[in-house]
Length: 112
Image 1: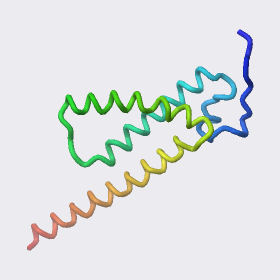
Image 2 (image 1 turned 90 degrees about the vertical axis):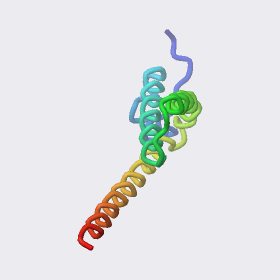
Image 3 (image 1 turned 180 degrees about the horizontal axis):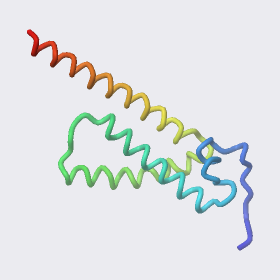
Image 4 (image 1 turned 60 degrees about the vertical axis):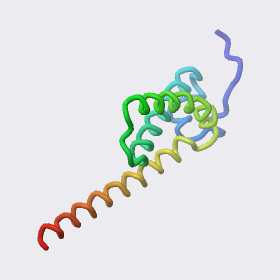
């Protein structure tokens, strides 16, 4: 198959360049989509406080998979995956500190 377009690697985001969108577009876009879906699921689970019922969770995840498609197209040139990674790290730190604070509060209540 003849290569129709050539993508300049300097124009790509870090994750797009990492997965090789400029070498193999199909494989690179699929890997980028998978990375964005995984990061979005992590961010959703870290950021959403309530547990959802199974039916609501299924609907949310279906919409999440659909919504990650346009994000993947944008992530070729924009730092979408990088932003999701930073958000995941910040939320993980927040959740860890919140868990630690609740543990200390429970410890103080037991000693009182």
